[in-house]
Length: 231
Image 1: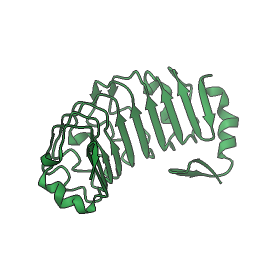
Image 2: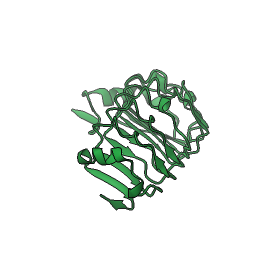
Image 3: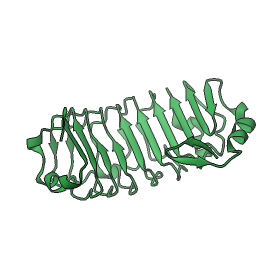
């Protein structure tokens, strides 16, 4: 049995050969294919994305809609790096109903639509790292009821509102490190019962600023990182 990524998916035998053999001509020359995974750099558009594709990695992409990745309904992992995209809108991820892992890294977003993730309700892992996010509201994550891992590190967040993760009751790992956070609302963690790892390292939050709710939940946390110290 062949696998694309042992962490996420097992692929039936013969899918690799079918993908590489039948669709090799549709990719630009700077796309690399390994099994059911496609990795592209500095690509402006693609004719089509093979139907069976499970993972796509894009570097320096300009418009996700030009990549025709909605032709891959079985896509499980999408990674976008060093992009030239100003907005994640509510039509950025249409048709990706099986997407489980989304990594949006290394860029400068001006806007994230509050309904940006409404078509990705099966997301388990979401990383929005180094994209200079300054503010988020609960509506941004309200459709992600199954989310277990959220990484918002290395942004410019200053405040975490008490309802930001109100719908993400399955969250187990929350990473907020390297932000400008000065304040955590007292109820921000009250509904995150499965939470086991909280990373607030390299922020402006110190141990004496923690809300009482955190101490009530501390018995279930296996790791808490504050500034440069672990508790």
